[in-house]
Image 1 (tube, rainbow, N blue to C red):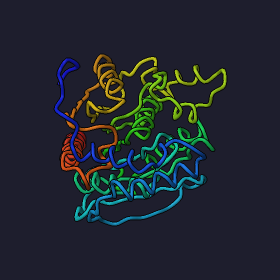
Image 2: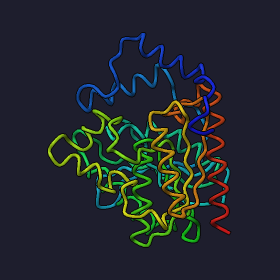
Image 3: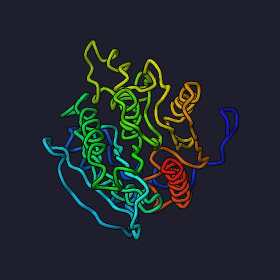
Image 4: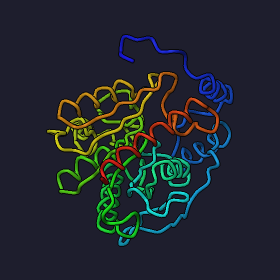
Length: 308
């Protein structure tokens, strides 16, 4: 698909989610205080798009040593020798979501790729705006890198991944890892936000960055907008998944182009009937489930190739 191609209609199952949400009279997701937004997000998900029930391997919960950052390690089902270790950051506009809301994302990735997935409970805005969440994300990747022997093994590839705001953190982490000499085999970017100078982020961007005179400068910080990094050359190979009904669609096309221009191996997978957040809709949308599985299978191929 290209910019000039008219996509097929939005998946009817996803259009029904939008219809039911509007008909419910529930306010928009990003209105009110932090706790109110998070409670609303949990209720809306349970009401409109519950998590799929997936079989899972071993799960361990712990806290990053020396920091109050929750981590959840998920081992792949029936895989005695995992393919890789992947650090995952959940979506939610840097404001909502947690390791519980996105557990099924990580289980799916673990089972289909054979990787041990570590989900990171980074701090959230508006209580903890930028750079708190970025610092947590980077601290988690550094720690996992240093201790990966206790997950898939020190000789197995390390990767990062995330969806939406979590995709932003994964892309940022990939740039920082390159700069710090931490080798990554892949970055899985599910409809990531890569340029917060785009006004499409609106109130979410304001809660994450603040509204003071330095907000515009913050939006150009590569720790906020990886597309503004001085160079992307040498970052990990990227796998990007997005649909044309996503408000970040053009953002994702532009980031894929920037990565390719920098010489980074980049696979852009476009799913013509899907919108933002489709990895969360796999229990109600067959198109979303097929897309999620396809992305996991593509990631597995990248990780296996990196290990050989």
